[in-house]
Picture 1 (tube, rainbow, N blue to C red):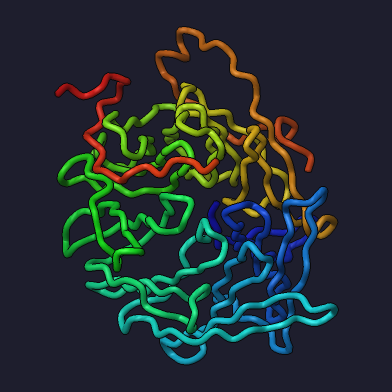
Picture 2 (tube, one colour):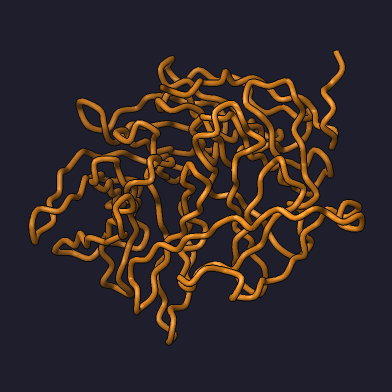
Length: 391
């Protein structure tokens, strides 16, 4: 699950709604900044009940649009506020009857030449991590879940971005790292071994290989790389700990739109080809949703619900995609998308295997025991076939 930081026009007027939205790893809670203008406040959504509902968490002072937010599995919301130059203070917000409780955790300073960002919610639901990115070094901080307030847990050489969890315990973290003027390569960080770094993606020596999403149950990895067409990124998939090559399906390549994965179906243990993948499709005409499985040669394109908090959503284990949305009439909504039935491909479709890059008609969309832990290993270069590499 990912957060997005765009803005969208609300239904029935020109008001702008903030849409940054982050969902916990277990899909129970989410958080965002709600309100408008200078009257922003934290809002927590509960997603695992019969109906979603939102709880406002306002304080005496409005929040800054740049506040960092992360929901925890116990329903509290971590907030990071920039207070003085590079200094960020962190607190936990929670409802206390009609009021909002706040527990101060401490402060962290961003690097002189960089910013501080929150990593995606940890799979354990308890800990929260921040990343300070400098010119030559990236620092990882445990900002919630520790015994004595924020503490530095790792220092990684190079300029890092991204952030994807590789296991269900919150130990193995993948980051996209650049050393000097070299290419960007995803690496695995072991947080229980002081930030020990091991290679994760090495498709070719000069390719830029980034990890976008990972599913610990199946080992499915969603990758963006320019290995198959230098200078032009392609969306591909591989399997963590496997010797099979990375594949770059043609159906995920649209000439006039950007395609970005934002959620993977959980619970498909040892079956990466069966995982449903939700994709955000952005073009000049707007944003809509793609649904795809590695076993399929076709990406289904569906209209998103009106007011979709674009780039956010979650899969259920039985294959239903749930998309949060907010409109003036429904300020806290959760739409359901079911994957269309797979139809046989005709011969012309087999030749092209490319989905049309257009906005679908709105009528086609909605109305409103532990898994194994795969060992990170470098993935091999990827011919666009299902053949295993020789040797």
